[in-house]
Image 1: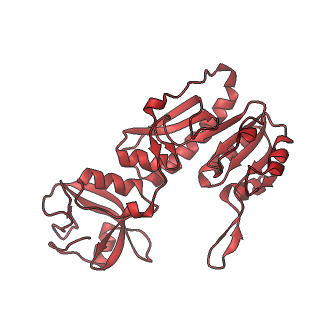
Image 2 (image 1 turned 120 degrees about the horizontal axis):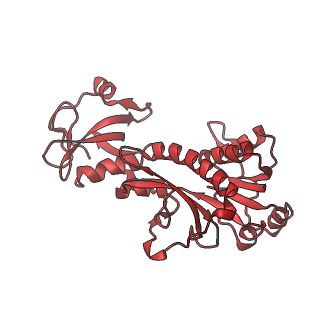
Image 3 (image 1 turned 135 degrees about the vertical axis):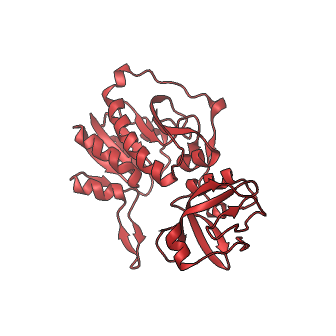
Length: 301
């Protein structure tokens, strides 16, 4: 097919690669404009932008697809379809309806559950046993379009980072399969009554509330790892908790129960597996305790 690809972050790169490897003609790649990053605040292209240039593809970075000139340039490509993966802009109707077959999206949840910006994190946080990828025909609503193909995976023990890396590969494979099988796929309308909304992650949510159950805190830790990182305060130092396990223990919420860093929660207890001190790399519990031992009775805030 003659395709337009629209994506920005790392999550979208495997789909771009898979479509290129499958022999599709990618006539243009759209990505968010380069952003200033690093100490020198130099303009840095997005991961998709950089990869597209490596593949020798034309890259376009309009500030807004609502701009009439940008829309005219898009439509002039006369593409069979557009593939959209975490592009970062809400697409107007002329873009959605522009390609001959429309626009197809890789979404990181099992729709209609978790429409919105943070489906991977919200699935973990809510305790969903499985999550996955939905390939969707795009329309103007937020992730409301007909579903074409799905793949699922268990969430147990996985952080948001783990699932991100797993789902971006799954999404690439499913998108290639979808385009190869369009004539045999019957679109499935979403049941709006089953929809949930995956709100964007607010950094304020990352502070651990030790009055919650051990199960809820362990899910919060996984949902916010690696970013923004669930955190607590120990003697005035902010520490990120990147992985934790539920263990036996009982006591006042937020109190360290032993020298192995078992921490009492509202119900039950958890023990860190991986932590990160301010300005330091992530480290295993044993390494953390060598640098900063803890004692029973210390309080976390």
